[in-house]
Amino acid sequence: MRFDCPLKTEEELLEFQLKGLRWTVDHAYRGSDHYRRKFDEKGIRPEDIKGLEDLKKLPFTTSKDLQDGYPFPLRSVPFHDIVRIHASSGTTGKRKVLCYTAKDVDDWANMFARCYEYAGCTPEDRIQIAVGYGVWTAGWGFQNGCERFGAMSIPIGPGNMDMQCQFLVDFETTVICCTASMGLLLAEEIERRGLKGKIPLKKMIFGSERSSDAMRRRISELSGIPLDELYDIPGLTELYGPGTGLDCKYHRGIHYWADYYILEILDPETLEPVKPGEVGEMVVTTLRKEASPLIRYRTRDLTRLITERCPCGSIMPMHDRIMGRSDDMFIFRGVNIYPSHIDEILSKTKGVGSEYQIILERKEDGKDYMVVRVEKREDVPEGEDKNIEMAIEKEIKRQLLVTPTVEVLHYGSLPRSERKTKRVFDNRE
Image (cartoon, rainbow, N blue to C red; front, side, top):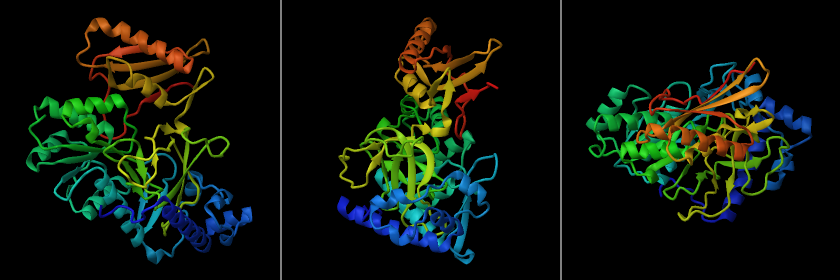
């Protein structure tokens, strides 16, 4: 493949990572007041990094460091070398702003082009990019990667279902890039308008949010796209943006580009490595990033490393799909719960659709109550509602040791979004 890593063995990859780590530490120490101060506080000098095992000596970087350093946090090059900035899409507090040199932009395009290759795309594809453009990284990432890859890009942005469907027909789109929520919206429109099987759309690439198994199955059923042609692409503004990995056609896990960054999976409480295969927080250290390098950056995203080799033969290691964020966890009656826990239970319950909400309330008796509102599939008769409710309640109690109230709703009752869908509503004081 044109954009795949040229390294042939895992040993070569480890040697490359050490070289990149040593360069990054030296570059950040020389170019960034922030990093130099943090290194000096720990008594660390660049020459102390002699092996990959020395990574653990380095201080962590957090989102607070980016907010405190606003508007140009972690900057490690002169301003005249910066060609672009991107920022997080959050709406509260100071945005996380990252700078890019021309080489950073070039590297990002190559990484993203690799994603399209791993998804089985070809330069003959027509790729409809239905994610947001602007100061955030989504649209730019998909766009630059598509152009570097050499396929036709259709930069439509999110929303506007009439135009989306018109473009699918008129431009004969073969691949669409969007959030999973947008993918469900579009799949419902494809089915409603009778386009299923009449357009050449054959792949979807999802970014920005976790997609449940139930949602993926529903998107496949409605759109006619085979389930194994739905791909997940992780992305983080701080780490270039989307395009830092992708699951290949075997869907055994997300191949991440270990020739561009080192991934640690750490216990979010102890900050020590978890055992192989256990869930922990993703902590990333870049190997080539010039303008805003990351050193042990705590992403707050939760996943696990997959230790088996992929049948595709790539030496790129794999992590699981993002299971949520460490700061998404909520405490209900003394139990730590991640939305992904409930997501997984619902995905395995017969008759359940893809959309759900978790509502937390504190009533006058001082106790907390949880309501799980879930859509049933279109083909489920009314008489099955009670059985579905009981099955979900029983499984949540068995796995999470708490008892919710479950409400089964008609298909299409819950709101859809072309961006990320809000799932948890914590109304407790």
